[in-house]
Length: 329
Image (cartoon, rainbow, N blue to C red):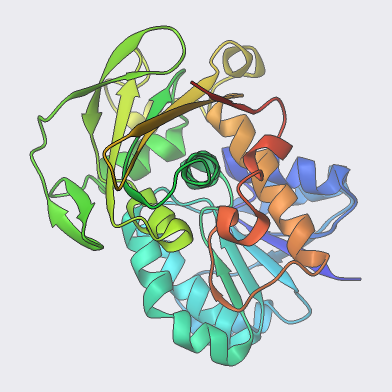
């Protein structure tokens, strides 16, 4: 049986992805560090999964632990610490790599490893859940409506509270500069250049941020100019010591906090097309999308090298996840 390993399954989103993978009947191995043994074994016993324990300090041990694995999901953030060693080990082991990183450097690392991955017949698919899967699908849909798209402005409307892991990752990976894509190159821009986006219920002020979608949307669509924004609802960013936060929002909190995204695509003549995406809470979406991406890769939907979810699965990928829909304005 093709086998799917999740590293970081003891975490909030990784654990939810494991639940969905087990429900889909995937041959499942839960992995993590020794200190998470008890939690991993309890989850594995409930899901009928195997357990493997290894740290990221010994590259050869990682490769050995991937023996017999077909698809590997890295659910252990901050991805600044985990993505490169796990991608490198996956290439050596001949295992397809997935994650749901929201950190730009993960995608730069995937681009840098693209040649090695292609030579090994290994796919690198960071962003199999989260904003990259959401916004990539929205961008692909919107660009398909436009002849010769030249510019994209895209924004994510973040609702609900953050998980402890996300808050820790965010606090450790604040981008030192705000970037945009201009003529296919990442360049700095003003951090206070606010813009209004209508996510379906009137215009909301959104601020520019450096999202990995600058890389992934360009990779999938070829559009040369891209700006990324976020609107954050009140209470979404935690205050105080993030280590004291709960694992993550409850089911009831997630159900009450849907995510939205909006896009404006400008063609070569200056005409603008607008579309919006409405979906479930980001954590729910990410866990479901990562499990579905793994299922598809196990079923043979593979292209070696660095890929994006929308580029690999098609821009309707997000709309196959839970209650997600894209509407043209």
